[in-house]
Length: 179
Image (cartoon, rainbow, N blue to C red; front, side):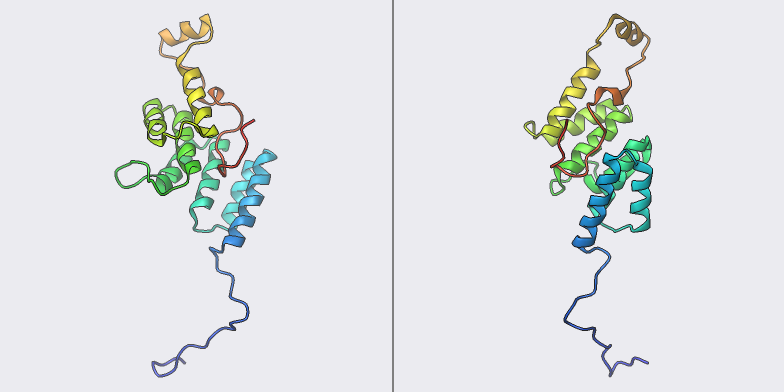
């Protein structure tokens, strides 16, 4: 029994215990999720995160990317807004660019064009490949490519937002290539 006169027992100082938010464990999880997403197995990636969930913004971003690829846009938006915006809904300056571009991507996929463009303008880093990719998607969404598309737009029918993007939606890190 512990009392105030007795300090709690100390653990060995030779090897510190592995904490759930350990960067090493987090990196291993993100590597596994990246491999599963590259193989097109987003459901398994969600399960991998769910089974060893780490309360870490990078893990939340990875989970949001999985939900984007599964078509669960509302969940992805909720997760990304939680990690990328402040209480006023503005982008936080201290978060990685990949969180911000994933938020913009999820807004585009959700069909929230005004929010998408506002977020893209707020990001501002026009030289980054992910931002250029999103700007190109915005341009493709605003310009009808065929007579059929012009006809549909007269009746308020817009093209599929995901088709405006090149490649899979969402990124786990800023280093991912955009082929």
